Length: 271
Length: 296
Image 1 (cartoon, rainbow over the protein chains, first blue to last red):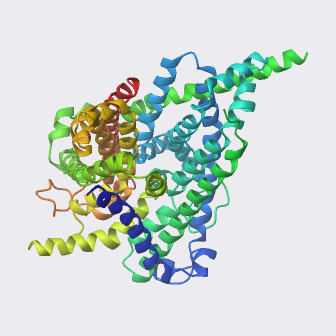
Image 2 (image 1 turned 135 degrees about the vertical axis):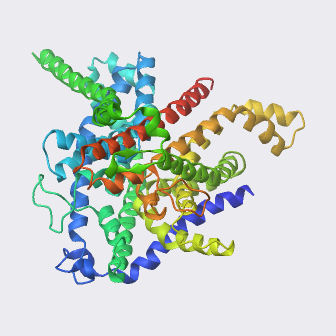
Image 3 (image 1 turned 30 degrees about the horizontal axis):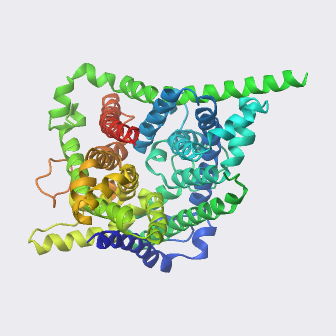
């Protein structure tokens, strides 16, 4: 019975991937991923989804980078500066867990409010900021999970050798936890590239390849969503093909995260 | 000189870190206040109780009743939880108490990948597999349906929340001290009896909290549900009815909402309701989990 339940989960995952590949592979062609939509694309004429792939990559890189700038210090601060204040750390973890649980559509709505408030139009920048806010809690919590297991003795010996706390953060803790941190970054990147609800309000959609931060950008999840809503069968097939592209990106990221974390594991000081 | 240099570096770094931490602490309050300010317009016009319990959704006549959406969201999420809870619990018990560590090594990536698949992909999968399946199932029971129903939404959601519930459950079952099950086994209880009367009993609040987290995750899920649930505004009568959950309402109408201020504020209020419900669920569940971890 329990084995059966476990097998069900594995089977469901295989079923998802298999059904997407089964439907997506016949519709996938080189044109699909190397061209932008041409005139009449949404009625079944030629073109591809390069605009969405590029837009998604820009968006996720931007958001992951911004989230790293804000997130890494917080994760280090929690584990290096606040070692004595256990209660504060617990409260912070609590807040982050709550933020992690907030649905992305709410972040999307908030991003929309700020966009209107600042007088911006739907643009890549607004999308990047919204997605950054969305992935910050995920990134910090995953880094925190890695940093939390750095032994106290390492912290104390670095301190007794005369290093300042920020030196401990960046030269000891960061080094020690590189695999965990890379995994956290890749995890957030995957979340950023796959999220549709947060970019729905803020990033807009365009058929052109991204030129500047203040223009709307196409994203892969929205491309799938819009194409699937079309009544034309060819366009629907393309939606399946786009879904396959997206799932491949996610799988590659997931495998890369595993390889990285094993490769850098060797550099760790062991106790 | 060297010392001063290092000292300033440290100061600059720690200030930067403190500012970032401050941003994180302020963020939830910004979320709530921002959404509240936007929906204040609606609060002035209608009373809160009316909005929640009214069944009339006619934005053009300024009638905003959230009842159909909230009830539909509850249907979908609770149904999803009922479907995935037994599977998750059994798997978690199997992985923590029966399986060899090799099996766990296989399962970990499976769980991670399930958690990493974007919701749009789940939506596509739902349309490809679940919707035709539900349509057939409906015909089998003699109900005519297109397949775009609450049940389809719940089925897709039940798969989506598996990784979240499973991860928390595994963590919780690991916090149960080994001595407890050893004591039970030494008294002559079988392994299954030990699990049933000792481990499940000890972890009961934790298991409920894990389900609570899964429920709140299901409640907020947007795109995947929106794609399969049918989007018809009415209070659902059965699982083969189409529905219109709260997040789908926000996502579907963002384009029109700018034209009418009241509509705009109604949608923001929908987001606020969603936020408050999710935060309440999350807080309650996390509280229990933290308490459990403290006794470890």
